[in-house]
Image 1 (cartoon, rainbow, N blue to C red):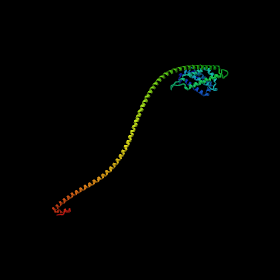
Image 2: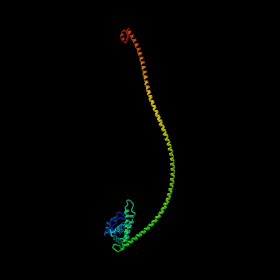
Image 3: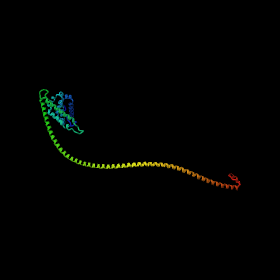
Image 4: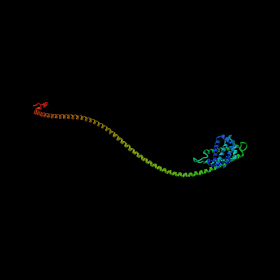
Length: 358
């Protein structure tokens, strides 16, 4: 009741305003009714909720211009979901009569269209920390429901007739339908006109864009042609350098092969020389062994000759010494004989030496 009495105050567009909770509630209600036929049937037959929804559709400026568009559009969408319900779920002709009498079909659709075209739905903020009232999915959902409600209302108008029975639509409702169709035709013509304008603008833009692109493409073509010529020249230089380098490498390869062949011949010569040196060394080792044996034999012979010479020399020296001793003995005996002759008392001392006294 407080909503209808103008108790919605607060910031006009902030998510902390009291009307923000009402927007969230209406969105939840739309989703719920579109997915749950039993809840839709209960709401469509509730004698309290329907008048409150009608009050919300005509809430006016009680909650500010922003929330007016959001609340009125969402309330119309809730009632429209009830109208587009399947046969037997809700009393659709009664709901249509209530909408026609309390709001008017044209105003009803104008409020839904204002919600669909609102900036909060079509151009939400892109910042990561910015608050978004509606998601892209809800925008698509609203468009689908809007089209379904419109098809349902037109079908009711075509099949229900005007007057004549409790299930038939009243003249006022039929007039509302006719007015709705005229509004849709006017919107269609406006859309066609807008499309024509957009098409002409697009064509002009495309012509200007093509002209600008043509100039840019010509400039780019010239630049690419110059770059291609420079690249071809560079390729020719690189090919010439590659050919020269290949020729140099071939010559170097031939020289290397000749050098390797010479080294192989030198290796073979060294191998042959080494083999000759080995044979010569073996012969020299054999001759050395023979010379060592001959030297050993010569040394043994020399040592034997030197021993005989030494013995001869020793014998000669001994013989000479014996001769000297014999001479000295003769001298001594002669001296003793003279002593014994001179001193007979000493004869007995000389007798043991082989000398007779007197």
